[in-house]
Image 1 (cartoon, rainbow, N blue to C red):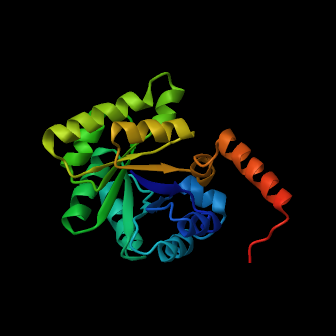
Image 2 (image 1 turned 180 degrees about the vertical axis):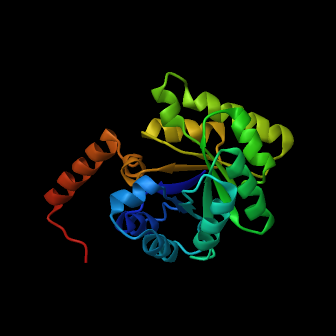
Length: 218
């Protein structure tokens, strides 16, 4: 499963990329607002940090004509940009036009398997079902991922399932077991994956025993 970081914080992106933990980045208007920087500037910097990896940058218009105008600006930022569009009729129309023109598209705000089916038929590179927000309203977000995986496998769709709104490491584990193609999570959640009390205890024991030897390395 590919790991995307859901952030516009370039320091976090560099740190995760240096550790070999990144396959791409997703951003959205809320993350850009949190970063407090110019949209085009920060997306360009992110694209330079992870060359060749998909970087999702979202349009904010709701009608097809304006979406296409914004997408034209966004996709010129770098060759690895995936234009992010909402799962609406106009968003799907934009997806189809951009995909036909060779641009990666991430169809976002997916909350049903029917919506995911539409995204695949429109030729989306990625579809982003929001598991955490699904959980928030009393549904099991992972049931949605299982349904999408089954449908996509039934028809050999090329669209990649990008599990979004990931809240904790269990979401990542479940997504991997189901066979999702990609997950995107905040850097803090990705870093939580390395944590285990027995690992910490083991390191503590090794260091204690090593100190007793009185030796150094190098």
